[in-house]
Each structure stands twice: as C-alpha cells, then as structure tokens.
Length: 354
Image 1: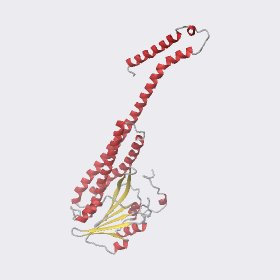
Image 2: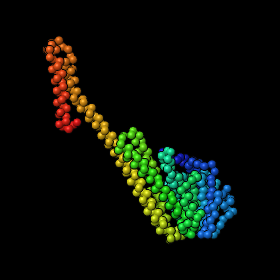
Image 3: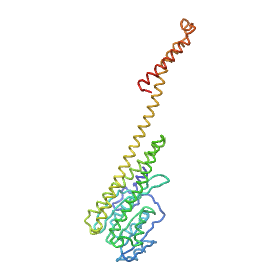
Image 4: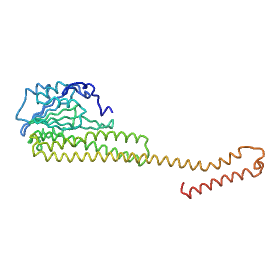
C-alpha cells in the first residue's frame, strides 16, 4: 500500500495553492536541464540555478526546461513566477500522487502522466509522476528523480532528425507523452514473458510459490491500470482542446497517440484476464489434485472398513467363541478377508472409481 498511497497529512489545514512537496526526496539537489532550439540552432546545457536561466532568456527559440527533483519548493516557485504558472498548478506538480490529467489555462496547458519503469531485481513496476506545462514557445517538465524515457527525443533534437525542430512546442510535448506511452509496451512485454513462464511452470509442476507470484503480478497490473486509464483522457484533451497552443498539423499525431494509448489499455485488460484465468486454473488443478488424493484415501478406507470390522470381532477374545477352537479358523477368516478385498477392488473398477 505504501507504493500507491503516500501520506498527505502535512497539507491538512493549509490554504489552497500552498506549496508543499508530497512524496519522497529521491535526489539530493534538483537538476535543471535547459534545451533551446529552432530549425537551424540547438543548445543544451545544465543550469546551476534558475537565475542563470532568467539571465539568458531567448525569444526566437523554443525552450524545453526539465527539472529532476521536486523537494526544493523554492525552485518550483521561481519557475512558476517566470512562466506565470498558477499556484494551484504548482501545488499539483509538488503532489506526486496526482492521477493523469490535462487542464487548459489559456496561456498554457498542464498535463500529468505516469512514467513507468520495471525493476528487474525486485520484479516490480515503479511509477514516477511527470508534469508537463506547454506554453506559447516553451515546454517545462517536472520529474521526481534522475532518469527518464526521453532520450530518443533528446537525440532527435540534437541531430535535427524528423520534424521535431521544425514544429512548435506542441509537437515536443506530444513527443514526450508518446515516449511515455511507448515505454508502456516494454513494461507489458516483460509482463507477458512472466505470464508465459508461469504458464510453463503450471504445465510441468505445481510450484508452491506460484500463487504469490500471480498475486504480485495482479497487484502490478492494478498499478498499470491506474496509470494508463486516465492517460486516455489526457490524449483526448490534447486532441479536442480548442487551444491556439496546439497546431492542426499536430492533431494527426495526437490521434495516433490515442490509438497507442487504447492499445495499451486493451493489452493491460488482456493480461489481467490472463492472470485471473491462470489463478483459476491453478486453484482448480490444486483442488482436483486434492480430490484425487482424497479419492485414493477413501477407497483405501472403504476396503479396510470390513476388514477392520472382522478383526475387531475376533479381537474381543470371548471364551465361548467357536471359531477360536477351530483348526482351520484362521486361514478361513484370512481367506474371507482377502476375498472381500478382491471383490471390492473389482467392484470399484467396474464402477470406474479407480
């Protein structure tokens, strides 16, 4: 539960727009990365402080400002003043438990998405909130920690490939969200491979840890569904907003992004159903195996019940039991007991119980 719900008690009682970081501090100091470009020029550097950015504003270039680390409220507040971002938006940026959303504030569009990564050592999915502010000639992205899925976008910007440096900041924002969605397919592929491994184990043998693995994967699928489903609304909003910040030439790419998002949702639902089906098959097979064991024990008990009855009678040792004095009493009783066993085995086979 600690991975999906964080404490927000320190925000209780504060006025709306109060800047309080809700989440874990994942790096020591915020990292500010600046990218400026147009069709012919490209500039990329790491800033030591926001004052360095303020003193080097460029109006004829598109600006992409990326901040890693949200715990320094002062940095976030300074960025808000520079780009005239509403305090409520800054509050949402600092709250790392926001669901994916999109809001149009006229001068800029605010988006929230969940960037996922797969931890191979712990076999879990980790979600990181990414906030995107799209303005007239800028894009500002806020991340919780260092490391993201935007390297392909950075490389395209450096090399000037495609249309990313020819189009506006709306295409850059689309490209960033597209990278987040494309990374979902990588996560889902790992889940698909894990499900295939579980199915193979079930075909060969019953692993006692299989239920724990299935339930752990089902929990990860809940996290995936929580991240992916609301993202559809974000993409729909990008397509349907009548905003001057989004060019008509970018709409066709946003529609393609919507198709990818819907495909991810379908895959998540399919994998969830497969996990539920595997769990049902496992429980059914386990129950069937237990029934087979109980069947064998019941048959053995049924065979020994009459034998036990006969043995208990002759174990009473009364003085005037005529069979006890008989010369052939023991072999006769033993033969009778063997015949009972044979008769019951034949009867069970005839009824196809064994």
